Image 1 (cartoon, rainbow, N blue to C red):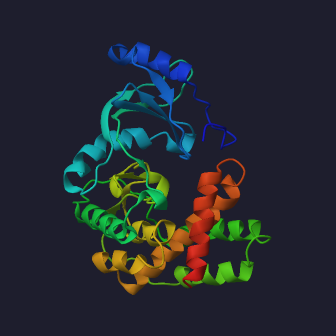
Image 2: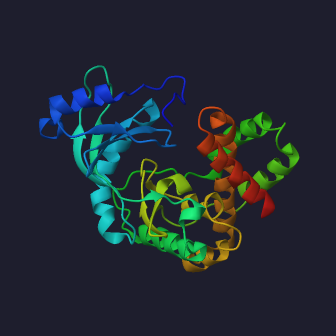
Length: 293
């Protein structure tokens, strides 16, 4: 998306990015620069030459994401079975732009829409192996991630249910949400998670999942936060293969479903008119959870 999605976001034009590069990284300033069409909501993305990308937060709540990626992605990458972004340089505020921003190695691939994945079951297995691998990484010193207790999302979810009462049966949504909300909390230590494993953050090459991008929500917490990919991205006939690899217990599986429902409920009304791709992902998540309840 190239339009405005948030009332208080910073509009980022290629001319601004060019000035920032010229001041701070003049060795890259003469490379071709072009915006990358994206359904991402937190950051603006520009391709720089053939091999680089520039990523700039567009909203205040994303202001620390680039710095977090700069620190942690190089530590995570050697342990993961899929490619992830490679940070190269951290830029500073300037020319009226208020936050730090980053230059990364460009990752080849296309958004992993279903029509670009040759074998959906293999995609489920590959995604599960990624989740299992990131969960095994030592969490010492890691930042808190998105994986908070579901109860912390309760008020926002119920507000979203009200906003969607003309589209969905509010009682059915409430019942599905409360089923997940009333499960046993994660009893173990916090584990690493990506935090936003939906189709827009997965890349495919030659028909197979090849990379995971956008780690702005990464950190440690409840592993159910990544289990939600079973409803955010996977289909009903591949979900069990994903679960079998991860060996997910019943409570974590139910919390993962709650995570997917909460993501869908929050995304759909917020982005319905400004980001139809993300709104569609939200709608699909809601429908998949309701069909599986």
